[in-house]
Length: 613
Image 1: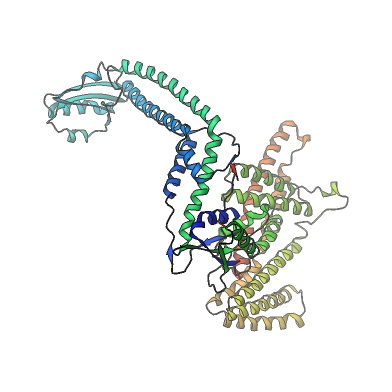
Image 2 (image 1 turned 120 degrees about the horizontal axis):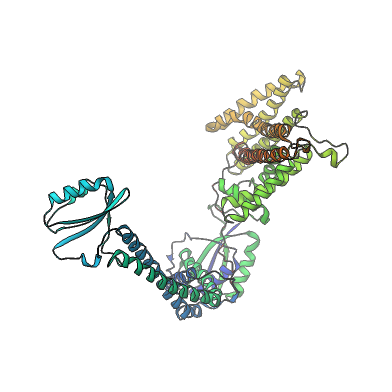
């Protein structure tokens, strides 16, 4: 990755920005040169306002298939948007629809009030008076008598009418404007009606009839508005989608000026460019600006370069998960390839069932279709799909088909790996995986620390590697008889010496040495969770495998229970496989070397979907 500086004439600024944006190979950075900042373009606010206006119009339309259109220069684009009669009509129709919606809420409230007071012979239009205050309330019917008595005794020139509806009651009170009835009101459970609301006029029966009639008129008007918006959508949606895309591109270009510095006649651009793209950028700018440009690579630069990844699309979810943890630094070893290889293996071993692999593949695919393509669940589902294939592969190796061994019916004399009789071998495989990944992590740590000039920590990684290997041999020989005393005793001595050396060299990170053996043994969880899944599947098969000989009713009942329990076991196994597979990589492996905290490479670029150059 190269840090470059480009100097162009001020008069070529728009052309240079278009070239940089179209080429899409530079990650812009603010220059540290002590020069003036470039001011925002005069048309920035106008572009932003027009974009908001276009997007607001699109939001009012029904979505349609977009036909690609040709992009146009900014000046022409601005004029088209300003002069668009369709946009003006869309907003007028939107305002009319919003007014009808608001009026619908008033009609709903009027119906609510009229229904509540339907038991009273009252005309709301005759309640307004200059001398009295008129208010309406609902309350629990059991409070009505006390309220009437207290209201009548504490107010003069007052009136009260009421109606009971089962356990509730409504009242209308009229009292002198000088009277203060707040003390009365706060003593009761009251809900006040707005008797001044539009459409709360005349008698309750008249209000209900008027509401019905007005709703019918509004529905007809709303239908006309929606039909017209639908017609505009058919004709204008593609055009407006193109306007929105072009304005978005122009807005990004205008905002890019905040990164630039300038002199009286030039402006300066700085940013990071992949090494293989530097010459392309230089040549494209030189040709596009007729040679009126200088291009330099900044050699002395203490800024951390951004991290660029360029993996196949189907593997990018692994990058997403690593970056979700922390973006790799550009000056350290990227662990993603090891994660890509190890995670499916760990998951597959812990599931080890063809049936569970098929079911989880189907479930992951269904979830993937329903969620945001840029979100966490989409990327987890992609990993899940890949891991499901691994689960099927290891299921074939271990002869597990919903817990039932079927290999002998497919390939003669092949029974596969047996989780019950070969458990010691599976435990050894788990430990070997742990040993290999921990040692690899320590080796990566040595390289990273050495490159970062942390020599003592780098040497501590070497002594840690010696410690893990010698301790493993000593434990395997002393406790499990894998080696004779002539091998494991010297190994134990080497382990002790390397432990002391590691503690001395590690400094403040000395406590991490304690984790070396525990992290290696932690890979036994591969065997543990895999065995638990297999045992549960075996018990389900033992107790609930359906048999036609038991009769059709029991066969159906057992089939339902059989599938349900296997689905539940699959869900638990999937959860454990995903969580433990991530843990083994992020905790046991990454902590040996991974620092993270990098900056992701974000090129100044765009993608056209609705328009073309």
